[in-house]
Image (cartoon, rainbow, N blue to C red; front, top):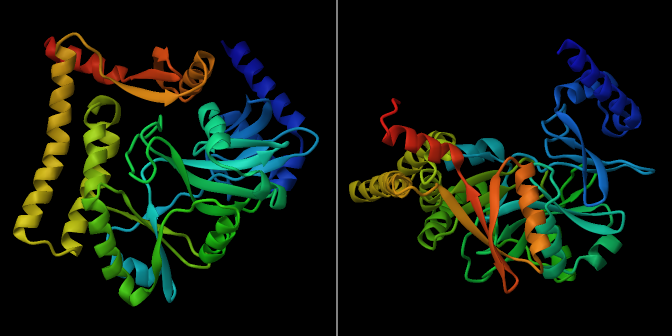
Length: 390
């Protein structure tokens, strides 16, 4: 056992030597820190779609998790998307965090994608720094990016893949339908510096590309009231919330979501309570409490919110327990449009790389039904139904 551990450490050390000091030089991270991160598994060698790269599994120094550095004659860096913090109470947060004005954009319910041109190919990365084969193909089908990347090869497009044929987070938007892409940031590959809000929108318009909706630019004094009204309307229309930005993008943005979006996430999580429930529960309940307070809701409004929260927890969990009690498994079916069964199976392999248990249920008429299994929820419900103790 000790011999095997030493051999594994030596292999990792040799791999790191192959990368050399160039990575340290490009990113401004001490070589020893990179070596230690590599040995701990926070840095991994990664190869997909013909691209060899180093993948950042965790943040290292100032370099975000999800960062990818391609290897070869020329190293290219695609920085990870920075974490956006959340405000629970709008008015004091905006006054303390921003300057005179804020830009308010819609936060859409999908999955975060970065798109970059690497070695002449358009590649789509998920938040964690994985190349998604499905998204990479779909991006080329629904977006014309050739001219933008030809003129600005160092740009990274950051956006949200949304729609009902979104295999990660399916959500219906009437203006999107099955699948669409909305851009929220344009950033530089190496530095991760973003383009200011209005400049970004103007540039995207020049290339016929769609950005997320900009509600407006408001003074900090009026912004909290405006945002509360916007978020209430978004919630009534089953939409997620907003991202609040410094118009010049020199300060970190903040996010704020509707009660309906929060309870929708709870409903999904408690459909698979032993896989997702605990991670989702506390933060979303906290958001609900502070939002109800700041919005100074009436007794009836608070009662309605409480009912919405309770139903989003109990009903989906009960439905899953009943489902498993009938010898079924806790699972969800995802439908994606692909050109072949091979493409569907390639996507399933990608899901398995992410630690997701998935299987192909059906493929016909260019549509694949993929079943994602939630094994922990299935196993624990069976155990408790058979008399196991909690």
